[in-house]
Amino acid sequence: MASPSPKSPEQSDKSKKYDRQIRLWGEHGQSRLDSCHVCLVNATTLGTEIMKSLVLPGIGAFTIVDGHTISEIDLETNFLLEQDSVGKSRAEVATKMLLELNNDVRGDFVDESVEQLLNNSPDFFDNFTVVYAVSLPERSLIPLSKKLWSQGIPLIVCKSYGMFGSIRIQVPEHAVVETHPEHPLPDLRLDKPFPSLTTLVDAINLSSMGLKDHAHIPYVVLLYKALQEYRKRHPDGHPVKRQEKDELKSILKEAKLKDEQGDYYDEENFEEAIRAVNAEIQPSRIPNDVKDILNDPCCINLTSRSNPFWIMARALKDFVDGEGGGLLPVRGSLPDMTAETSRYISLLTAYHDQAQRDVESVYRRAQQLLVELNLPPDTITEKDIKHFCKHSYDLHVVRGRSISDEVDPRSANTQVIASQLEDPDSRMPHYVIMRGIDRFYTEYNMYPGHFDERLEPDIVELKSIVNKLLGELGVGHIGKDDLIHEFCRYGGLELHSVSAFLGGCAAQEGIKFITSQYKPINNTFIYDAMTCQSSTFVL
Image (cartoon, rainbow, N blue to C red; front, side, top):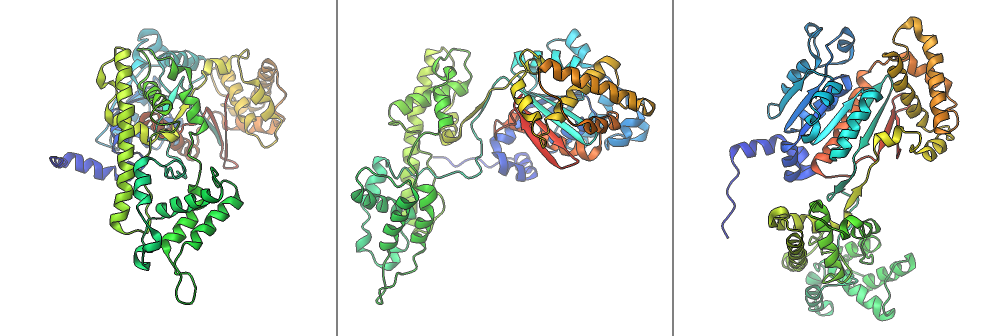
């Protein structure tokens, strides 16, 4: 096989530039960033903080939609804007300043409001990867959210309001292959070994070995041997409870070699095996979340319009029901361990080869499905299947809820709102008040407290609006009048420190959608900078 061609200087320079983040989401994740196009509605302090946190890691392109001109208030909190920018297009100046942060990124702007675009160019938003809507009043947000919901494009709605803020994610469906679990467990299959693993391990005779060889047997082999001994004592049994696992540990300890005084030698590989018992001697099974995906109607009832994720899921399901014998494909990797090199390589090769056989089986089935659906064979490549099988234990699907359903009292999630309002430590009152502020803005075209001389009347009016909203939802009162005072005190001002924090969080959520890695928020995030605490709600 020919050796791979060396990377070009341009590729090497880019990989070096983004090295730290590539370690998080890989070259394939960075490639998705390179090819994405993000839209930002309103280049406020929060909006530019979001884009800064997307431009620096190297998104492909962005477009800012903003019909406002820069005011003196913008200068107070937005670090990207300068004194001579007052009166100029906020979209144009923000775009220019953001492009100076990373010359790999392309940027454009539209000096119009979102309402104008939806009326005059309804297809404008159809080709974006992700859309951010910042400080957008409800009357403008709802038409945009309906448009993006129909197109299946993720919408991330962000607000920074004094010491408080929120992020609301709207997406009909989002499938994640690489969820990056915090503590992934190795896929050893010791309770249900595949034939080549059985052949390899059964050929190793521990009793005939000297100390040098005995102390360098991979701990996976030791676990397998101990498990077989356990099953001789308990036919068809598998250690699950603590007492049962303690017995397995005793079997491992008794298998260690002894010196002339009858004391056990200090063999690191056996210690590794004993430490691994609790976490790695688990019954081989399919996680419930993955079972739900394999039994999902979208997986079972494929059409020519099905997302490739669901076609691969169906191929995986057919493998599980067939050659897999009720199990997912072997992952094909092993953790590091104390072992003699040749034995470790032999063991790793056995796992790798079985994983490759499983991938080939799933790939063949995926190609059959593509033929049945009259789809091109390159819709799903073998590389796609290999990636899918490797991460099949951690597949995740998020099904969201539209913002129009959330704000409609007839379909609002009143049960969650009511139960959270009863909790004195909940941040649900923040959510309700921000909804009330949206209504205040719709009615008066300004935020409560914007003018100092109107602070008290605005407090009274906002209380009335919030109470009316609670009545429509059929839930109790918020019980925090002082919180309404606090919101009114800000007059709609964005604080840079709060916006910087929220901007980083919101950018992170966008990257999750762009790379299809990590689980996104589902679906509302509320931040209270006064207590440095946050909450998530499904609304």
